[in-house]
Length: 193
Image 1 (cartoon, helix red, strand yellow):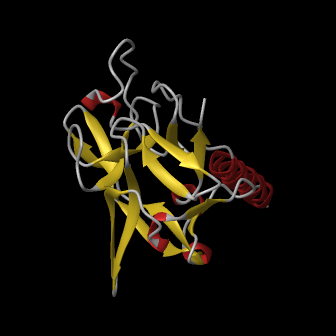
Image 2 (tube, rainbow, N blue to C red):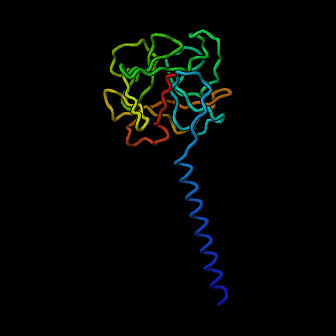
Image 3 (cartoon, rainbow, N blue to C red):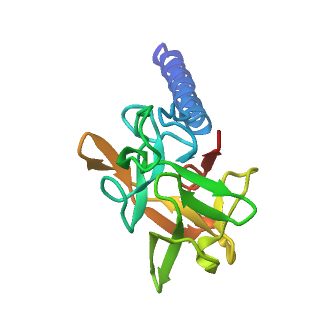
């Protein structure tokens, strides 16, 4: 008979521990770390740091160092003050213009982000700014999403996995149905100043 209270006591403590683990886990999901971006404004950064090892977050960035025709996200890089605007190290600095919907490179003037869409495949390019409908995005400040203006059900997202990029890390960009995308992979913070 003495083992019944011991079994109930173990069950009680096991239940308490399980509930604490669940609460800690839910709290971690709800309060993901915001990135501590070392880049000078303007920039566009994923709102959740995810697993960027420096705590800097994932900024929109050109593929490779300097100007490139393709975009992805990359560890936000520390600012290098005193460099000219077209300095290759400013390749992770982008401006969002709500009036035109364009996301334009700060370092490389006259080029904007454009979604290149084929069946089952999307890539983001840096092309001459134009009135092309896939160069127009809507930043929804209430949920943080960047939506394609011509189809607001489509959100700019990042991949689930982080990939090494020299001393930094990166994640590919994607265009995904907003309703099916994980919140942490589709929320963006736009910093103008």
